[in-house]
Length: 209
Image 1 (cartoon, rainbow, N blue to C red):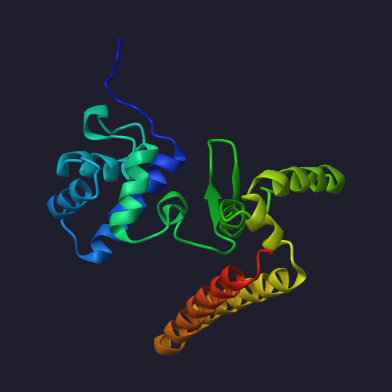
Image 2: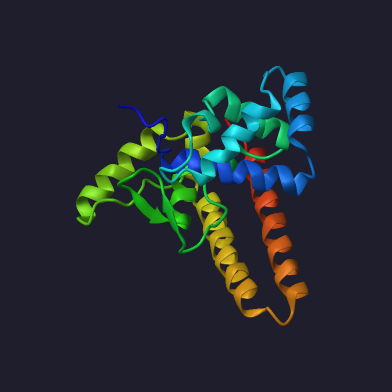
């Protein structure tokens, strides 16, 4: 006997939560988002978008008729219309030690999830250093397009990436310790974001020959 209830996986729940968070941050209604998606070439009704957002609540008690998984075409169009990276929808809105559940059995630090998704690090699932090194080598061979991979392997680029990560950690600390001075926390976060854009410009401007 079917109960008409389903359990969404962790990524579907993350996408649902992020979609609602980003849509509300943009001040866009379900209907307006539907119209903009249609203009972008992806037809999704306001009801369908609402059902994707409902996945954030999936705990075994939500009716299957009230939920809808976002497929890859949905995800791409939503990211375009919301003006974010697809990763912003796929991954938790955290980048530090907070836990990020990627599957029902893989749970990693949010920082590691973002590094993995951005093409810089294999998910650290092996305790043995040699095994993890092999995983990282295999990851490096295919995670990025060949030319991008060559650029990312340059020592200067790796140094700048490490600096960016360090500043991200400092910004996170600043946010935690600056409750009495929210302006300082916002300033640190903005500077970190600006540095990230500057790094991307440096990488994109490197010679490819």
